[in-house]
Length: 204
Ligand code: ITT
Image 1: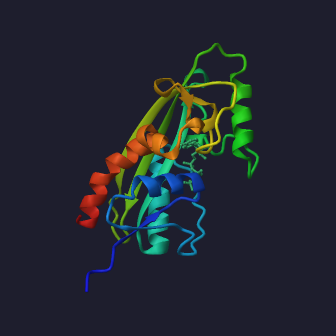
Image 2: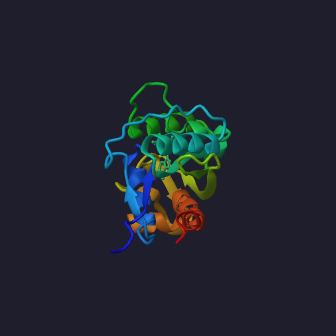
């Protein structure tokens, strides 16, 4: 009888991230679990000063609660004309609780309205991997450059994807298939960098 497959928890409550990370890690020989699969509801306070601090908080809290090796992602959109905002606060850009992605996009565009174009921007993602009972957390990051445009295009992805134009594809992020997004996104690059860590952690 073979050894049972080792498990990795995708430590996020964001459905879009779960789907992308599942696809990005489909070639790695571990069983991918979601908080939903194990009935875990955890809302981690993201009060760190960096993506890494927030990613670490999420990975450690989920690893502690689940006893599983956990991979968290903290990400954000940095817009040059807004001095890097919303950045670390991309999810909490509107103070209103339970704001929708569409409301966040409308707010971003309202803040950009009087700024000269092009509205250059970069998506950033930092991944943290935590092992239960082990204090040292490991990190990987990735970025994707583009431009914010005022007209919404596409239905794929999530968050700011419908207004994020990628010059090399001549399309918006939300117009890409998951496979295409997963070849060039900030998260794809971060997960690619994280694979070396995962292989070492799981002894693969
Ligand atoms: P978890 O903390 O549970 O992972 P979250 O949505 O709160 O989920 P973040 O705190 O990292 O995640 O916030 C990131 C926000 O940045 C996210 O909600 C989107 O608004 C935006 N964002 C991140 N990656 C994105 C992507 O690939 N496409 C579009 N928007 C993205």
